[in-house]
Image (tube, rainbow, N blue to C red; front, side):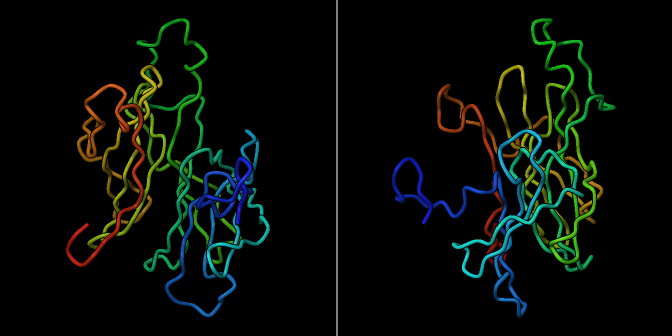
Length: 223
């Protein structure tokens, strides 16, 4: 359906919205909005967050801008339904100029530009998928060299689990850690600084440089 580099031999469902996450309704009567998309309206730096809808997951409505979220959103955005809160929860990203935990002592002088921005995992919520709350900080790195680049969140065993992608700007690598929360607001990292899903050992391997984990497939007692 979507043309890319001169042909349609691909599995793209949208090029209008940047870095989106898609949620499929399990129940509900609004068939035109069975599939819900949550992302950034374009790849431009100052683009707003937005949503879109589909009845089949392939053909999508136009972009509905959600400027009230006030998030950078340049990350692996994801969205899910919370039955406890009766809300949709969106996980995205903010930038902080002066985060509390940041230390700059180990940053080379030539990389001074990197002393300012710091990536932070953020959360927003909505009752109707159209009007969202302002995104708020829910998780940040231990220091400048271990920034929270993205987090895929899912429910399991009555708690929320998050695959946290930790970015090191000095090595330009990303590894995956694990975090958990009771309410999707207050998060605890499990073994900070320790891989949950490790990168490849061999330099140049497929997942040696960067590893981005998706939400898993859950079947009965296995993930």
